[in-house]
Image (cartoon, rainbow, N blue to C red; front, side):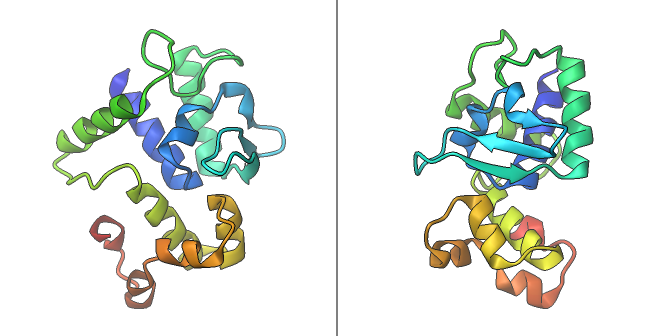
Length: 161
């Protein structure tokens, strides 16, 4: 179940661009499958924001929640014993997950960079990305976007950030 949880965490981080600490504080009840939104209650900025739930992530999370047997009040990504996962545990689990797949792991925050870059490339304006990332200043959002990747249009660029 650990690998399945790590896969679900990767899917969540790539689809939302949230920070690891935000991810670890999401409860099942924060994911609204009716309105296709996710409520982030715990942000670095101490604000709450609601972000879109993509169709792909929706399907992935529905399967994950069902297979893990999670209840509404549970953390979305708990330890296998149900307790809240700590950042170091999440980081180590993802590092091992990538290592077993012969992929170099650059850290949890890399998912935010990938999210911002791919969102701008595929569908979103920079101001929507700014809102999803929870940035007050657009300059911070610009720092997350890899423009070289977008300009060169390399399909494998997400692994070279």
